[in-house]
Length: 164
Figure 1 (spheres, rainbow, N blue to C red):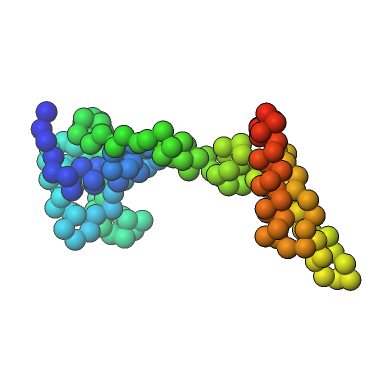
Figure 2: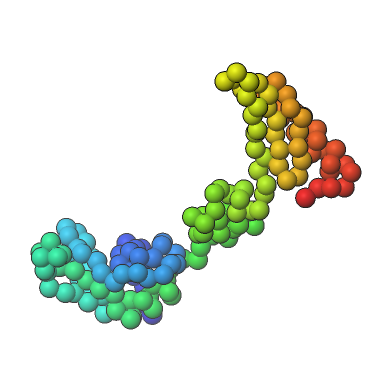
């Protein structure tokens, strides 16, 4: 097994749309090279890890390269292992991967976020309360008092054994 420089490994990974640990689903196989990258890609082609293709108008008249099966093997063999994540960070990473399906992280976790309700009188807010599936606070003249009332209701419900 030949070792490639880190910059060369990054070119191989990028060509396939992978991250710096070689993770992800390859969604492309091309690298349009310019400047110093042409020589880096040509050295990878000399090693049999990339194949050079002729410039085209689509590539801006620059040479472009694709990763060979040997290059794919090199990525899997030489990409560094990703850092170990704590359980909390791993859970958050799961959320980032599928976050489009949820309103926010609390929704992803299944946490019932409390909401403020407002009573109106003569076109102005007059009373507030906080509520969720877990507890309902009293109607209060300020949001601060409503939050305190909600916390009290939540604590008494937990004390009575009705948490979640």
